[in-house]
Length: 69
Image (cartoon, rainbow, N blue to C red; front, side, top):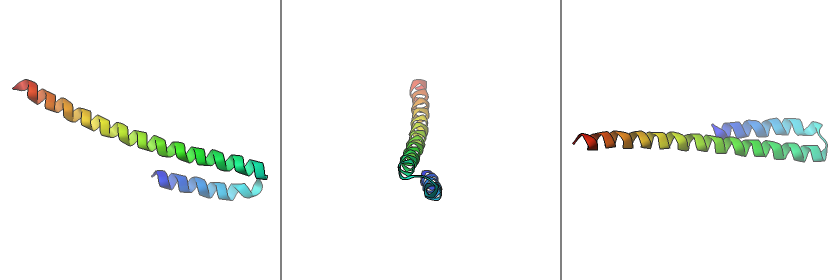
């Protein structure tokens, strides 16, 4: 999903850069690149959080089983 988002950003940038001056083009490209990086990091963080939640749930279930003995 993050690659699709990044490719969409690149496509939008390539279409929009023709109408900008050189410095505006660089700023726009940098902003879009930063946005794509942030989106990728957010996706990674969401996956890590989901993995941690799953692991914590497993640990809780294991603890219930251990305490029942």
